[in-house]
Length: 454
Image 1: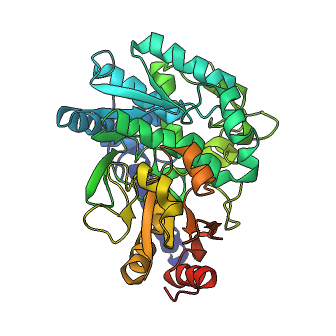
Image 2: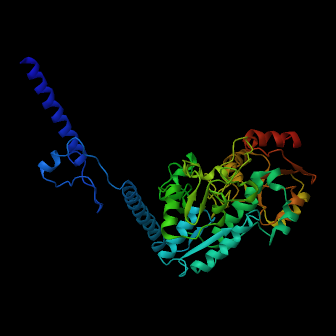
Image 3: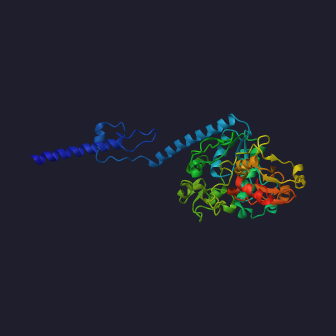
C-alpha cells in the first residue's frame, strides 16, 4: 500500500510539473507578442482541455526568422524617428546647416534621410566634401552620383592653394603623409574642413559619428556644443545606431552606397591607409546583402579596423582619428587665438613683419593658424609667458601668407616659434613636440639666444 501511495504521489508531481511546463510554452509565463504572427503551436486562447491533451508533446513552432525581422523593423523605425527628429530640430531652428559627407555607410543613411525631409533640393542643408587628393578614385565619382540622385551640389574643399593633386605634390610633396602625418592631416583634412565650415557660415554641423565606432566616441549624444563658449553645435543623428543598423536600413530602402563596399571595404577613407577587412576581401556587401562572415565588419568598433592602417601619432600611439573630430578641433573655428585687446601676445601686421628685422630689438614671433589644434594647445602657455616676458611676444597668422612666413620666420608648419634678435637674425626654436611648448622652455630659449632672463 505504501509503495502504491508513493507511486501515486510521484505520478501527480510529474503531471503537475508537465502541466506547468506546458503553461510556460503555451503562454502561461510568456506574454503574447505584439505582432500578427500566427503560432503553429496551440492557440493562447485554446480551451484548457485542448491544452492539457498536449501536455507532454507541446512545442513552440513559431516562425523565428519572421519574429527576428519584426523586432529589427521595430528597432529601425524607432532609430529612424529619432534621427529624423534630430535633423528636424537642427534645420527648423537654425540657418546655415552643413553636413560634411565622407561617403561612408552612415553618411549615406543621413543623406537619404535629408532627402526624405526635402532638405537637399531646397538647399536647407548644404553638403560639404573634403577632397584630400588621396581618396580612392571611386569616391569623388560617387559624390557626383549622389548629386545627380538627390539633386544637390556639393561644396568641395581641398588643401589651400591647390587646384589638384599635381599642385599639392609640388607645394607639399607627395610623401608628406609619410614624413609628418599630423601635418598631412592639418593640410589635407583639418584646415580644408574648418575653412569649409567658416566659408559656409556654419551654425550647425551634422555628422555620422556613432557610439559603436569605439571608445573615443562611446558616450556621444545626439546633440553637442563646442567646448569653448558654446560655439559650433554638432548633431549626431546616428549616435545610437550600430553599423549593422546602418546596413539593415540601407538594404531596406535600397540606398545608394559607395561601390567599394562591394569589394570588401567596410569603411572608406584615404586610399593610402584604407584596406579590406579581412585582407582577402571575403566579406562584402553586394546587392544589399552580405557575403561572408559579416561579424568581421559588424563587431563593436570593427567598422574602422580598415582605416588608418600602419599610421602612428607622434607619441607612438596607434592612429584612430584624422584630427577633424578630436577634442578641441573646432575650438577656434570662429575666433582667433590670443584675441586682440585681451592678450599680452600682440598681433603683427604684414607691414610690421617686413620691418621687424630692422627694429633693433629682440622679438619672439609665434607663426600660427587658429584652426590648428597644436596652436590651440599652446595658447595658455604662450599667454603666461608673454605676461611675464621682458621682450615683445607677437603672433603672425601664417596659413594666410605661407610663402612670406617661410622666408621671414622659417615657418614650415604650425606653430613655429622664432626669435628675431636685435641684429635682425632669425633663430628658429626647437618646439616641434607639444611637450616642449612650456613657459620655462620659452624662457630658456630666449636666455640662451639673447642673454636676457625672460
